[in-house]
Length: 191
Length: 193
Ligand code: SF4
Image (cartoon, rainbow over all chains, first blue to last red; front, side, top):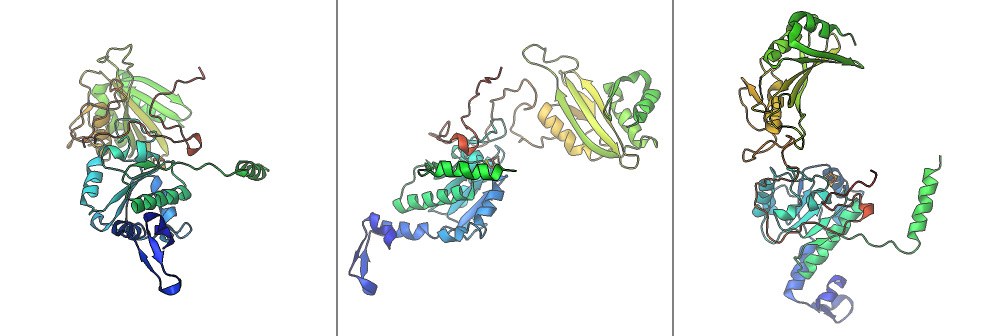
């Protein structure tokens, strides 16, 4: 129960037989965030990266989000993976409308977040123009690590009950990491 | 590549072939729009040309809306690329159409594969194909106004099917340089000039 301590949860008693008090909302949020059924709406190249994230190497199951549901009615998270064209926008909105509450949306990749480099007549400049978005993950495509970061951000927001759209920021590298990476790069580039 | 097809075309059609050129194996013949279908049928049926494989059909808009008239005479260039699998040669046949109601005969009777390509050219450039059985838009939607690959279609005009939600971002940040691209949707002046 370590996760919910910041949500005004208290564990009383110790050892095996203690009990905890919490708020109903907090408990619900905690339960929801670890059982996300996902609906992958994969339309473009980002889809490849999504498969990679979902496969055992990166093991999205660690986050309780491994079960894909190919029916919007049974899913909690809509992953919008790839470019959404103007022609597809009605489909996307319809899929979103068919999902049952509570539902969350992740914009996977730059195209879904803001249209990416498709700055033209054919592409929706960000799916937030059409449906509400919770987390936007930049990258073209984002690395699986970034995707998992985004998923954790969403879990955090679900736990807090926060529905404001948020962009995944890349975190600053720890001290010395940059030099280490540079060294690694030099070694790799040696003939 | 042999220039066989070009020679056959010149012998057969004479002055109706306006121009021929050949560059590194790419043979190009520019024909009069009125003979478009005849030329297509000839390269398909003639046993020495034998171009039974239809590779591509597309168009080019040659007008510059800043300097040219939009209804200039040779605004649209429609071309078809045909290949002979047996003889291993290829030809590109072009024709030039006026910017005012561009129209050309459909080559579907010769190569039925041209159907969707002609629909695409109609959708993107607004060139009409006479005799096309099903001339509808193929890539954009029926509600779309205008033809997006025409040079006078404004580059930033979008025609959303779904009304945009209120209070959405115009621009997203903060995407950083190491995430692949600066990602602000504005035109960055080219400093190399
Ligand atoms: S963000 Fe990049 S990788 Fe992802 S769909 Fe767009 S172009 Fe493809």
